[in-house]
Structures are given as C-alpha cells and as structure tokens.
Length: 225
Image (cartoon, rainbow, N blue to C red; front, side, top):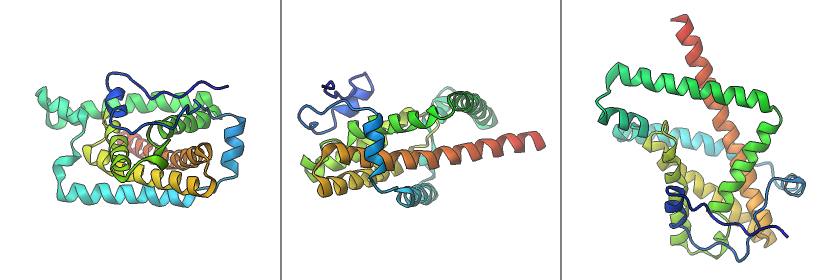
C-alpha cells in the first residue's frame, strides 16, 4: 500500500536523475522502519567491506591529487578564487564556514542522539533507491552512468575537492556490486536495496568519524597555536 517511489526532480537533482536508467515497475517508496531493520539484521554486517572501501577512497584521493593537484580544488575554493579571494584569506574563509557547519552538525547529532543513526540510514536508503534500484535490469553502460552520477552529485557539497567526487564514483560501483550480489542471491529488489543501504550507511559512519577527528584536531591545534 506504499506510494511508488519517484526520483528527485529538482533543478539540480533532476539533472542527475535524467542520467539514470528506469526504476523497477511500481517501486515502493520504502523507509527505514521495523521491516527494514529486520531485513538488514539478516544481511552481512559489511563493516570490513565498508572500512576497506573508505581506506581505498582515501588512498585514491591522495594518489590522484599527487598526479593532478588541480583536482584538489573544491566548489567553494573555486568560487572564492573567481571572486578574487585568495591565499590566506581564502583559507580562513573556508575554515570559518567549515567550523560553523561542523558545530551545527555536531549539536544536531547530540540533540538527536539515537535518532541520528536513523537519519544516517534514511539518507543512505534514499540515495540507494535513487541510484541503485533496478540495476539488475540495466546494461553495463547504464550502470557506469549511475556510478558517475552518484559521484558527481556530491559536488553540491561545496567542501569536497573534485578529486573526491571522482573517487566517489568508485564507491558507487562498490555499492552497485553489493546491490547486485544480494539480488542474485535473493531475487528481491527490496533486500538488494537494503543490502546496499546498510553498506552505504556503514561507509558514511566511517566518513563522519574522520570528519569529526579532523574537526577536533583543527580546534585543538587552533587553541594551542
């Protein structure tokens, strides 16, 4: 009885949606509810896979950035450069914006407590329905296009260097592989989507942990120096 899922059609999100192959017929607009939690509990933990994927992203970013340092430019730094803001002023502006956003996110997580984990899984599930659902019926070109669109959509995060968006295309490929592997086992789109959702959420948790560590290190170094 759930409503059918429809991909985002906004001005920016719609651009990425149009890059994707069709969804399964009458795909339900599922949520992270009791059924979803029960289904994910029956799936592998994906902790090791998510951790190794995260490590692979870090290694890829550093390797590519060494060869193509200009890819370390982010949307924010690019805009500031075009606006004539450079050098130490640009760095300070980026740090101030990042610090403010980090404090807001941290306070939000503290306020939400256990519900914060639900938000992490909900966000991952929305992206999995968006970019992976129906991949069992797509050809290789369509699957590659989905992985590219998934990585490219992260450019809306103004702090992500462009090299990170490229690395996230590979992350999308890992999520796609998890989805397809579970679909081959069960023949069930719902279970396959929940499998990639669980993997996606695990990966995001590792990413958030790194961001938190970097933020704390930045604050401590700022106080000491």
